Length: 303
Image 1 (cartoon, rainbow, N blue to C red):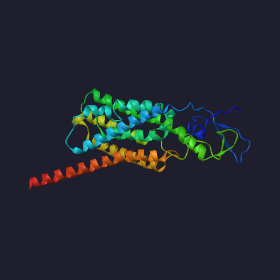
Image 2: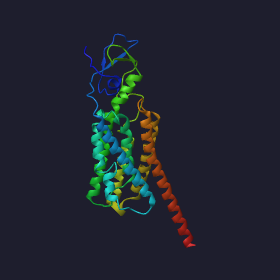
Image 3: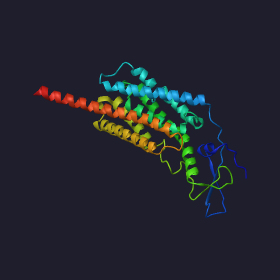
Image 4: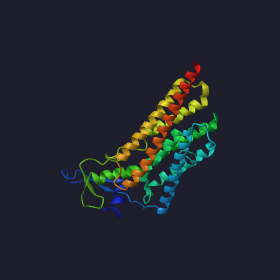
């Protein structure tokens, strides 16, 4: 039988897109025998990884700076229009991230997308939840938010196409024994599942749908204006809170289950995502403190 000639363990297991189950005569010591039936075409040049790294860092810094600026309580600042294009969820950055995740399977040197893809998606989540772009009630706002929702859904699917082969290969490597028949031939006591059993995170998840639902409720509230029911506004607040909880939980889970490679880089990246969550929490506390201060002042004025 012909087996694909693969260069090393990394490409053999972490980049395999099709695992083939074959018949085995040893039902006791090797009840399930698998081998990789796909060939990895190879990594893109390191320059591609560097460009993705620079672009991701730039959008992260833009998000952080805009979040810090929004903590000033001085109203909308003059960079609202550029902000739409500099944020990860904006009409300029989000399509680029979609393209990067679609090609991320071969971005694998300086900035491997199978490890860095989840933090990028969470940065897009945070950007979409934090900034309600646009102040118009016309069709432009609806189109903008609808395109953001579509972009987030497609980004989740593209991310799964990058991370699922890695998680499957991790399960095949750690939860199996080499049979010696070929470089990727392994014996297992249980069937090999898509995505493996060691990491349960998926891009197409409840977090994605909650964030999309938040954007839907924003459209309803913005277009309907004063006519919108109070229940819709409360629902929007509840969904936004749930979205932040799910984002935080995903990051905690992923940071506690770092991959077998480049743990330092992953630790730094998830630390940056936690930094955005922390800034948002501080912003909420400051606004709550300001509202309480205004309320107390109004009571004193009435006295």
